[in-house]
Image: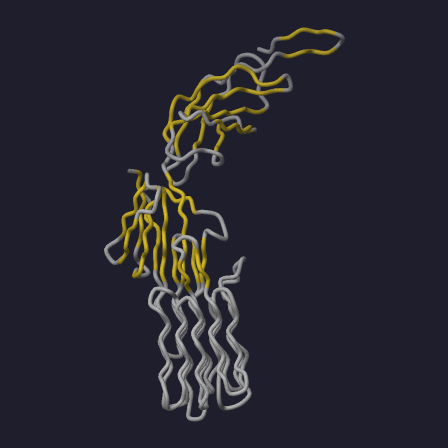
Length: 376
């Protein structure tokens, strides 16, 4: 029953007595815990409950719940640690004495740095008398521009490396867990439009370039292809990771948009393919980061985008010099060296051990392949 006294016409109630029971259960799908408690029928009633978790490394987290039975804690917890939770009833006089839930071990998880580059688009094909647009680079997503992923140990996560697009075909997407990057758009040809993609395909005669950032991400995953041509000679370059494709100028084909160098490997990826040329001037150079050069009529063929760099393929140089395919993408994973990654059977990957980390370069993985993390 309630206890207190009357003073100055106002009843002053005591703080609540502790709950009669308290237990904690770790989530099986997240770094979280649910604390269940039974309100005490003796003493003043609690209007809310204050739950404080303390881990074996000394970290604490406190939440207040208005529920009379449970509180869920899903933020500010440290993965893999043992926690005990103290529960106290609370009323307008403040929190009362606590009862402990006992110990519970949370799911373990690791922070993951990543670079996910999609397959580059193929260069554009043309009929006689025209140059084809360069293929757009595969789109990219990286933890260098965003937060690291927190991935649970023991859970299988999707990992896919997108293929480069064949001639006049856009590249395929790459993925790690929830992070997906969009394949590069194919280069323009006189019989069809340029492809939208992670980076857009380059324009050609009377054909607008493909748009970049098809995934509509912030920050963007790539850039637009070079502007459409106005005559039957040169075409423009495909967009790259850090710049739009170059537009043709006079009789000179446009260069592929520049790729980007990422700190995780200190390597450039996702350069756009150069535009093809049906005149005697040169085809456009591929963008840094694996873009293939465009072809020149009756002189040299286009180059494909670099394998596992997501480069766009070079555009065709008239009907005599064909376009080239885009390069395949790549997925790069870096985790602390206190964890390890295991891949499904369809994955091709190369592990390295930079100081304090394990780094996995995944060069082939299908849509059903996975990666699973564990503590070591």
